[in-house]
Image (cartoon, rainbow, N blue to C red):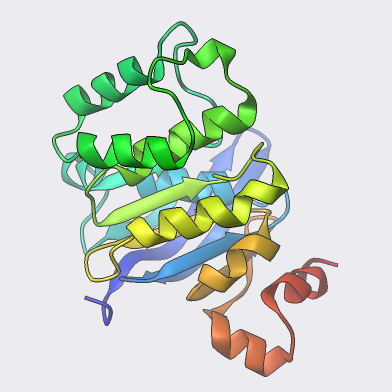
Length: 234
């Protein structure tokens, strides 16, 4: 599986009124790898991820997920963690888990409860009483409990305190099965996340600025991915 591409994007253009969010993007996301998608706010990262998840219709170009166009099958095989909070505030975490279990046949409830415990979350806690960081932990729990080949996460560490980020990432990556799964992770928290990246894509103003194997990029530029971010986007 690792020899093939999980996602292939060809000449992808997405226009919103007055804004060209993606400008003829060409990029592959390798299967069985963790790819970091890096870029400043407004670079088009969320639009690209939603295009892969089948939530946004491209203006032109093509997206293929394991060789197939986005549709019902690929949506069922993709777990998407959005940046926004999409929960009903009156629900408890347990109710949200029940909802996900009813919606997705590939949702592993037992794994969800294990991750919940790791995240120090109580099932009876209500969404409205949780901090932004705690809601972020709930979103991560639900996403990683899906037994799917493609996991897409848009700013999953948003709102989570810096001291916890590395520990949470470490725990979540331990749940990841490289033989069966691919992760695309958009984040501003490059310092904590970069050691998990196999591949990196730099996006700015709707265009690919740089992409490649993470170790190759470090060797070629003689610096960490974190320092490379400063150089690419300065």
